[in-house]
Length: 491
Image (cartoon, rainbow, N blue to C red):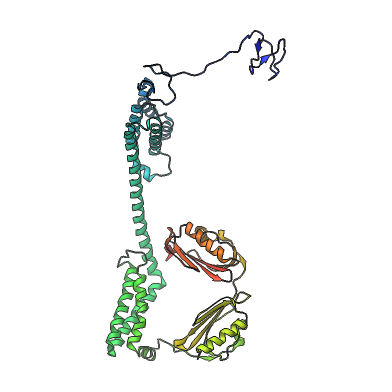
């Protein structure tokens, strides 16, 4: 009986070639039986002779611990290789490629060696770099994994685990320390930049002007015997001065932009000041010419740039605050609730009924062409405010050219118009967006990390991310949303 020397197939008697693989059959006739070759070594327990598998450190039959001269000298061999290395790169390769021993004691000794050479402080300051500390950490990880695999249930494993957890804790502590130091350095730098920016800002000039105005109010109040209004004016003056000192860095701000609080307070106390003084408005206007009284005139409706989109009111006595091809803003005098209601009906008849909302003092709606109308009845002044915006332009927007939008999820539509586009702030109207898409987009913004001090309502959302970007998203009606992004680092 003969067999093919190539594939082992039995050959037919007197065959010239193997029927299975086609190998020439010459020289096979002398092979009367198949040969079996054994490759490798079989490891047995020196105590009882039990056959041992790979990575076995204790004989499963007699409990004898398997140790050998080769594994016992692993640390010495590693030390010799590291000593003979001529560069740090060679040492890194030697450490990472050196095999972990098999026995419990040798693994423990190797773990101690790796842990003693690992520098957690250096590692934390050189994250994502290939260095010696990174190599030793990889060995610590391998020792822990191999110990867990080899004798994870043995009490000796706890020694390995304690070392491993200690290394992990040191790394975490160093990373927290570095982050804390970096945060402090960044806050100091930001504070210095903020103070420098405040000195060059227009806000500083405005605060100085209003502080002088407040001082004038103090003088006028006490001169006229208005003690209460004088005290309120002192509060107003003090608030403006406090905001100025905070912006200049004389008073340290524990919270970023906290100077806005005294500034807001100063503005708010203006109302009770004038209420307490009574005649202060007319007194200042007459003495110093600081305020202009409201003056009305007969409006020529045909001269309003986009006025032809609105019906002319019954009374044209009023005043214009803006008249351009994009915005019309005016006030109608001698307005009453009935005048307000009648003008709403005229606007509805003129087509302003799309996505309309109405209350006792306001009305808002679009027409079919996208013009946006706001009506507001100011009963205290007997005025009707009329504001009309032209439709949002249907431009194709390219988000890749807007740096601030790279941190914001891509909107559901790229049709719309930018109203502002600067390095520090972006404002854009997006068209062709349903309310369901708006809600889904707000969900994406939350998932993207805009969760710091965020607030979500039915038709609006705001939130900050860790980079200091403030995001505002609002539902404007008429399948339109508005997105505004401001980087607080520039404020």
